[in-house]
Image (tube, rainbow, N blue to C red; front, side, top):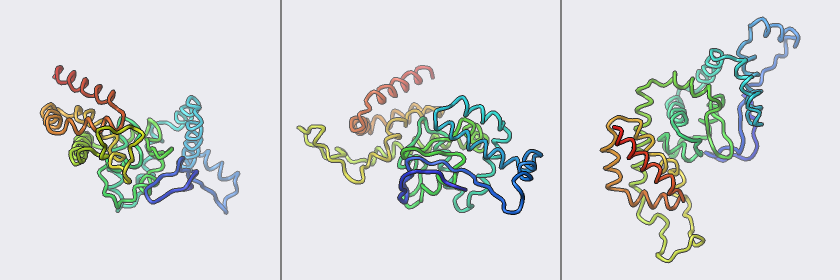
Length: 271
């Protein structure tokens, strides 16, 4: 595998831009013969990998029509085989971490920062998440410390990898991690005085809200993927509503909180 990236990388940090490309060469076979073998179908994986690499470059260049044309040239079946190839190459010892990370990326309603991804996936702090994301380089891409699925076809592929029961359990696990994290936050997270001004806020290091920004805004969306969710929502809001409001205030995301309450109310009325 060859990495094309810019920027430095700390233990769990991700470079500002990263895609993984498969680089293949041969010292024995003449180039003309290698291309002939490719045309005869003896190297479909390599051929499709090269097309996929081109599609990723076009996609990043916002030439989406041309990128989709390249993906279409590969075909759904061949894309699945391509993704199978990277899955089979993942170390067995990392398999559960790999599944946790990809399930979190699949179920998230927006791209996740590297810190959010670790929290949503339920990984322990000592897990080297940057390495796991790198191993999933055909399925995930990173840009400006944000991780997302590489292409819409990856979402379809992961839909066949994870059983529907795993998907439901994944939504519930994200909800539980979210409300557990919010409930453990101390009151007055940033130790603000009554007469504070926004410019006076000194964020602690580490900032306890950084890994939980997604969870504070989307816990209800994951909850509503379940059946009989109303009691769980009520219990959380009854016990931790003010703490959640403090999180929304710190994140300057009251609009998202209001929209979530409206969605919960609307869905409850339908049920």
